[in-house]
Length: 375
Image 1 (cartoon, helix red, strand yellow):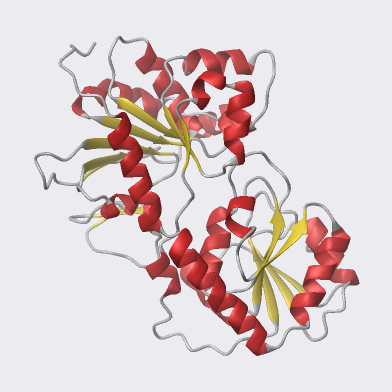
Image 2 (cartoon, rainbow, N blue to C red; image 1 turned 30 degrees about the horizontal axis):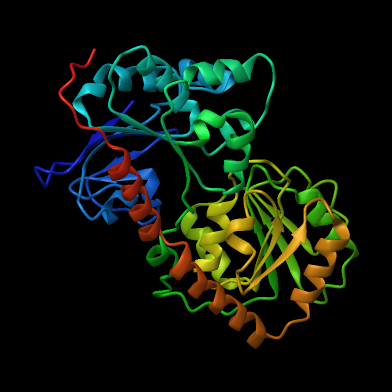
């Protein structure tokens, strides 16, 4: 497990402990092949914290290396060692931020046993427990969160879920749209690849490739091809369709290059009542790509008003087929215009700076300073 530290630059800045539910690489110098959440570069602010108006001191405590213990945590679907270590060291910080209930639930349970604790901000990406409600798990979650940490969600419809099933938590829940690193993904320096008659779909989890492939097989796509990157599970089933190609996961730099060469990006999604797929959508839009996206709880905030997105109904082959055919009939000029409008839309509504500023405002609003003795 890696604890990463950024030197404090302002005596009045907050001290923050950040708990991501992924591995973070520690680097002496920047590496563009890694996205900002996945790397700590010595001497540089971490991820979206670089956009805070008052630069905080940030320590990053990741989930640690893969081993038998980590595999056990994956099976039980929440982390133990990371939040336990965070609990032990919490009194060094003004704020503890957990990214995901897998880390946040156990940390909050431990902290709730004390009379005083630093402000806890929990990003609820997966709907606490996959947005499931049952007689055993739900009361346990309510007990763990009975002292109501600040909760941030990236889908506005998750607030409806909180209001119905966790009304006490609803009072401390905020919708903050996810923001992508616009400068990183919009940069086309050195990339002058010719656009191909290719539709691209990316993702290895929570994708409805069955609907996409069924729609593609019966659609009039002309000389277009479809590439699915990250999931090859349907390759055998659709081997008779020569215009569909399945690729395994590829590095981010290669994926960005492939995205810039394609005509449009398709993000087919099942319906879950929490956040997923948003990074792929916003990153593709930042790269000026027109999109076909399933309308779901997770995507509605990001695509309903996007000027270059064709929305389809989830699980509806006919709806997907219609969108595919419409996209394939468009001229290169029309596709370019749609993509450029998407890029401008992301820059003005869903960039990383806007997300960071809203998070900073929430922390500032909720932070509590007092002289009570920490347990």
